Amino acid sequence: MPGRPQKHSLTLRGHRTSVSLEAEFWAAFREIAATRGQTINELAAQIDEDRGTDSGLASAIRIHVLRHFRGS
Image (tube, rainbow, N blue to C red):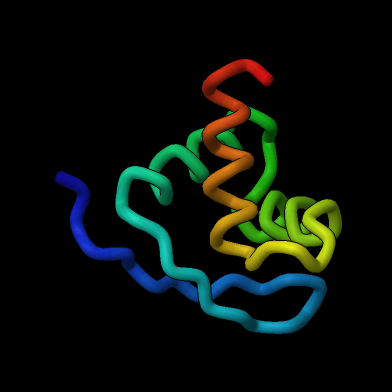
């Protein structure tokens, strides 16, 4: 059973924000960023730009991680 979400601060285009994700999602998110040669801030900013207004940033990151590992 996954643990409680962990809050981490990110900087998106010069502005600080906090995102809460489970440890497994943080690990996967970091892995994706490293594979792409990006920082997690850069990847989060890209996801933030693409997400629109229908979902929060944490949800958008989870979906991005899921799609990455599903190959979609």
